[in-house]
Length: 87
Image (cartoon, helix red, strand yellow):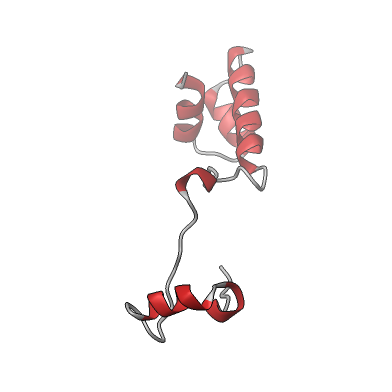
């Protein structure tokens, strides 16, 4: 998160109105809810994990054991169980 000087982006009238409530403090103005993105959506991590999980499910259905998959993907057996038994 970067900081921006209010005088550089806001009109004087709005700054005067905000100063009625806060002076000399840092305030955070969040994005609108519709602008939020899910975790990993921008970086591609979400898609990568989904692809990995699909590969794990396919290999499990192909006959690989949970312990083999845990060793191959460097995950715990409990994590592999969660992946292969989820819908």
